[in-house]
Length: 186
Image (cartoon, rainbow, N blue to C red; front, side, top):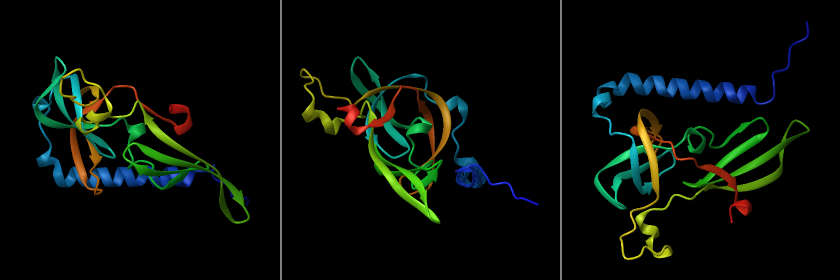
């Protein structure tokens, strides 16, 4: 009987799905009591980015160009999160995240009994997330720079903190951002 060869990348995709599901299930079982109640979630609105992390942003509500109130954690769009693809090969592409807004994509080809890198592209998130620490590069017309303004809506989302642990975010960013090849973004 002839065995059927799996689609390229299928094993990696299955491993990714299994890890994500298993990790999520374990976290939900351990930390359900820590989960904020839906009625306590902030509303949809504009938020100023204060800090950028691999899977989430720390933001404050914005009104009239001024950031105010307590900081809230906002989950990045899933396509921008490090935890889903870092150091994994899927369909002959390997993703290595080199910073909170940068990654390298390696196109792999089969050679002999393994893979070799055929092409490497550096990618960055566009538009770039800016924080108040980036104020020196932008003229702000006398106002304190609050950080990049994003739009976020209520969504209790489980992500990883920078140490790999679970973190609940109360909002999900809905501003359209994407990774682009570094040379195309300039």
